[in-house]
Image (cartoon, rainbow, N blue to C red; front, side):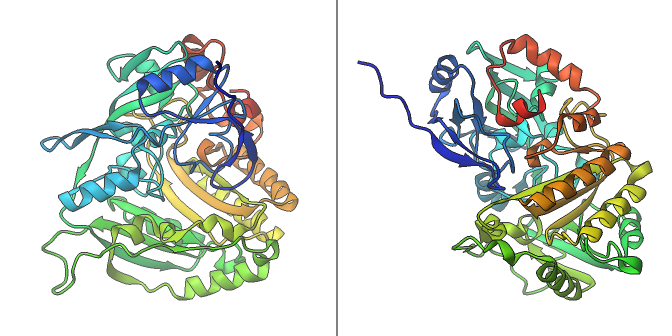
Length: 447
């Protein structure tokens, strides 16, 4: 008797655009992963679904790894953590931060798996100093299209190792990996806030503190003229026990609030975004404060399902990086076009980035490179898709590229920003000549 065919279920990325009906299965161990891989013509691995677009969508097969979530080993002498790929970053922080350890690189949400962090080669507020997540991965176990498991590192199978970091799951299924945590004394952050009146003052603030461990800016993308690019820049350091003010206990995590319904499509408009930006900027207070890990690294995690703010049609994010020599002109051109359309985003993040793969950490499809990265969220509307084509042209003209983990709509021409694309394709062809591992994104971009 044959097993009944699984029915497709509706899936989407965090942006809720696009949506697709996908046959989804869950794997609890290596044997179940192998069975799923060998039984599928095509499939893609999926974690907690926080890639924004279609990178973890495949109507034919989505292999969910969130049930493979065991912490395997930890070496307190070196900080090396070995775990299964489905372990969430939230669990890593919850287990190890109270014990004096923290992830070396973290994106802006805890609700990602460590396998997804490697597949997207995520970056954080410390890329200028720490690089991307791949720099801190010692090795990973990868199941390729034949069902074989290969342990990859900088010494063993280095080409496959680097192609997998940032490879968006297209080289195979990451089963296990080992990466190094960093020591911390407390769960508090020393935060210095700098209020900047325009884009130039913002960039100078970043440049004035190159040794800051963490730095990030919220930027107003709708102001023009002398106030264009005004920002609040947040510098951060892990606080020591000695420096915590008397009587200040280490901050605790507050329960997350939930967005219970989809906002109506008209809720986000130029007037509401301008009003929010004005209020947020005016509430910025220059100076030093002490905050917890969550409000500094994961402020939006305090609002469950915040993606519903953008309404039932979902949203898309445009995140680019522009090299430093073209950074100022490129950022100004982006802000000019956004303001001209009046299509502002209230979630605008600006960061400086350091060298990408000089230490062998990044792969050919890794997004980070030295320069400035700007991320903006837009409701998924025809007008905003038109705007993002204009933004794409600015990015391309200034030698930049877009982040695949945030992408839901870029065209193949934008892949010119990845000069090592052919090297990725060569490595992938060797381990998966029939492109068993594919996604809607890889098909859209011809990867």
